[in-house]
Length: 164
Image (cartoon, rainbow, N blue to C red; front, side, top):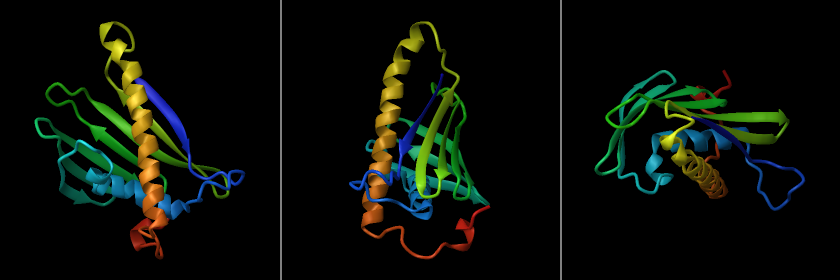
C-alpha cells in the first residue's frame, strides 16, 4: 500500500493560522522522532539505541508490542522512518518532507509505503489505516504549532540544523 497527503503549514491568505518558520517546523519534526511519546498517545516509551550522523535507531514500546526502526534526516528537508519486517509487522516506510513552493508557503508531505496488499481481504483495512494516518499527521502538526506558540522552537539554528 502507498498513501500520501499534504498538510498545509502556512497560508498567507488565512490570517487565523499562525505561520511557522521552516526551522520551527523542522525542529518539531525532529522532536517527533526524538520524543515520540509527546505525539503518539499509546506509546509507552522510546529508547534511542544508536545515534550516528543524520541517523538514529529506536526501540518503541507500545506495551505488548515492541517496534524497532531507523530514522534518517535530510536536514531541514526530510525525515524518513524505515521499519523492517519484524514479527507480524510488515516492512514499511514513512517520509515527512517539507515542501516550500513559494517563500514562506510551507507544507509537509507525508508518504507511507508498506508491503501490504492493495487488493484482497487484507486491503479492506487500508482505508481505515489511511484515515488514521491522516488524523495522526494533522495532530502532529497541531502539536508542533502549539509548541512553537509556547516558544519551544525559538533560537538560532544549531550547526547540525544548517541547510544541507
